Image (cartoon, rainbow over all chains, first blue to last red; front, side, top):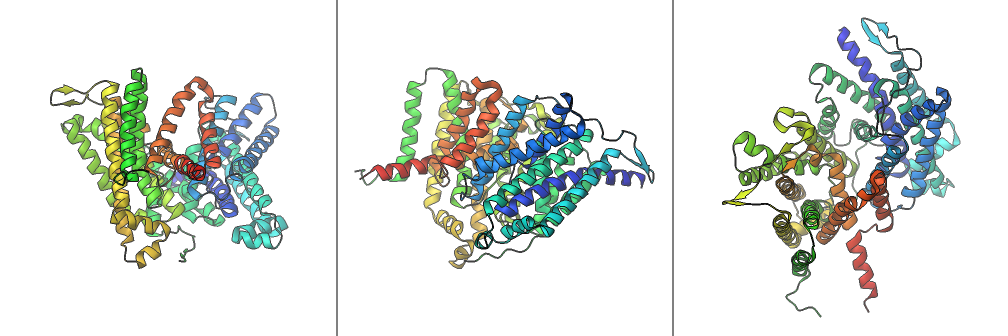
Length: 290
Length: 315
């Protein structure tokens, strides 16, 4: 029982990061139909920039802000310099553009930073908190709390602000949104910027636990993608649920079955779900018109 | 005016064969033959993938998994099953085909991004097994492959492999072009445009998609087997996600739907990193940038873009 609870804690912590990556995917996908494989690089940038800014003598909060700013700028640049010029290209072409971008960002990070693994100090102490016989790191609470805060903030933004409503309108129907006077290009840029920020925050929160390096982005992007698919592509609630579920399953499988195949869980689950429910857990059934 | 017997299909195959002979005459050193061999091998996998992507319109982000199966078959067959290299290669092709057959039906029901993530998952699972079963596969460090001996003749040297792989590619392109013109090829083109319309016209959509998936998998496994025999060494990188992406990029950069394009795309993506080694640290950054620029400025791919340009110039 204690052991199970322990695996649940670590699963939810990792799952919260997958959920944030999946949320970033969903945001960009809804606004533009683009699957952004560079999403994992935002997480990498969040961690790496913070590490190097702290090493340069900045206090942690300031370093985190700088990292978020860098990721947002990267997201905006990705949209302006790569996605916008390729507008109207096929889905596969756009996927390859974002993969090219992720290789480029990783290559630049390797030049600007280095190839080593880096850690950040935990925000509030390393002393584990005992809960019902299991222990949880204070940093895990930061990750879970941070993820919850982001989800809440994003929900408020989408539901309560005019700009958020413009994003939702664009996701529902781009042409109709443009007809009622919404600047869809601005909405798209906004989606990339917010996705960058969400990814960076996830990277900053998780780095004290899992370490970071220039290469951590790829697997995170793939798992975030799997999580988004699991929940049903385009559904923000599904993305969060999918991410948490994936993290939990991964942690339980690593604990009770085999830690070697921990990374396989995400992809086995996604194949299983897609075979049974081809539209994901929360996806709508699409009907093809002839 | 081209004579009547010189159909575009025959012209493509003849052109490739001529290129093979011409390059053999001008190449000054083994280094060039080595690079060309790698191009022919990648091109073989890309030609197969192009049948799936360009002809049938189904994306696969896990195709390197099949490359890995072919490559590890020739490494592990002699070691663990006591097979000779050629039967091992054959076994690899059969295994890749069987896996495609087995998972193809549920996977190919999916569309668009769902198909992309399912194939991606399949490829990564193959990579994970190759990477993790250290006792069998040697794990991340890779594993040695025996030297190929054909009836007493030790197959060695980049020039020999240049011809073996080059002829395999010519044959592969010939088969692919024939397939395009066959009833199955027409069925695939029809379902590329609209699956519902194709089904209404009496095409067994699921069966046609499954057929091309299996064929593409066998192409990839053959390429993997040849790669392992040529390098005499194989690592799980042959099956990793980046390699899958490289294969897809070859098809798209060359021009989807064109077998010749797949060869050109393979040449670009194989030669480019060799050329970029002078940049050392910038290698990845430049590769990523090149991919983006190609996708933005030559969206249709190199071969179709050039063909359109030539058609415009012609009176």
